[in-house]
Image 1 (tube, rainbow, N blue to C red):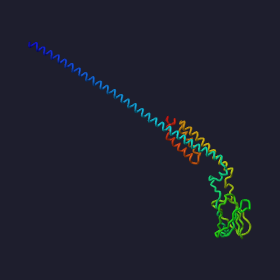
Image 2 (cartoon, helix red, strand yellow):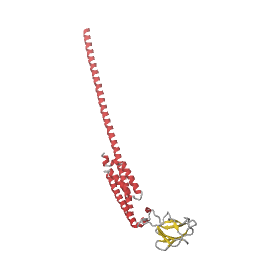
Image 3 (spheres, one colour):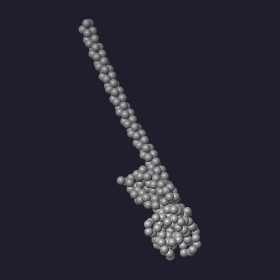
Image 4 (cartoon, rainbow, N blue to C red):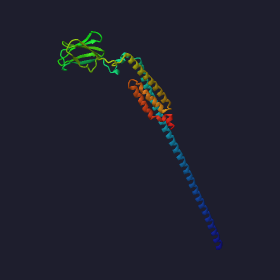
Length: 295
């Protein structure tokens, strides 16, 4: 009886060990399976996160590039507008020059002449060089005896005429006991050369008018026409420069054309200033040009 009980107990222990071992193996397999599933899930999640971050980065960079492209495009548009406006000013200036009155051009500051000047002079003794007092000085219309002004020298021999028209005039100088002097001259701010009073009778003629001392009407017309034509041509070059900016193909050619358009001189300085600002903007946005961007 005892032997049977011991065998039965031994079998039960063996069966229990087998069940426990089986449970342990099953639990271990389940744990390993859960770990593997969690690891795979973590890898999947990590891979998806990396892809999402990479995709967001690409989209962000595309937005930045698109914004930069848009800004540069607006800069090009502004540059083209400034160059075009400056050239329009130049075209208007050229038209005014070509349609202007040559007489007004002759009297303009371009030739640095004044309508009237104050004339100062000195009458001196031929012998000792001292000033001669109370000498009569007359201004005569050239080629006539018409007196347009008269004065006398002071105690030092000086005389002065106010607001004398800057045109060829005759200066007549005479006094008792001296030779009368008639001098043709053009009044200038610098005054007239000293007049030498020679004792005696008679008259002495002096010509102080230079043959090439002034502008003729023909010269003024020629100069005005040349300036007007250059201005108009420069303005037309400016129009072409604005077109080249919009095309954005050849950077250097566009800058050269814009530089030439500076000679359009629109409204003296305003037109060239606008064109110059446009050229500066072209430098900022030069990457927009095909020949620069391809490099």
